[in-house]
Length: 165
Image (cartoon, rainbow, N blue to C red; front, side, top):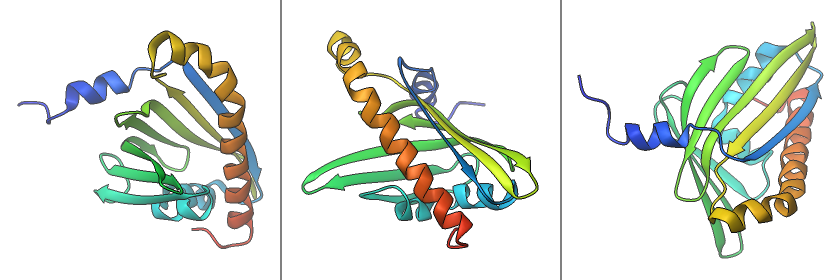
């Protein structure tokens, strides 16, 4: 049996990169509901600013291809992902495998009590630009963390209000 086209590239992209960022939020809802909201890929547009997300291939679960386009005016960043793991209601693993954004990411749900769940969003990006990228990362990191944290706070509000999934 042969591997699917692009398997080597996906394997290379799945290696953790040097650009690591984590955000966490507590959601006042059970883990099953929080997890279902995270799997509602196209609804990420509701909580990630300037971003449109769509399922390109599959049903949004393991093996699916997801595309997120973040646009500010004429500038646009295309994020191509493959869903590599769905362990309901605990974890969703993705591999970013586009031209610019590459590396593994994970969304984890931990139920703290019946109606309270912690969500952790963790990314390990390959930094483009070689040495210049590594030098720029300490400057870019705070903005990345702030952006992920703010998005998760919006996510939590929408879940708690019953507007997601």
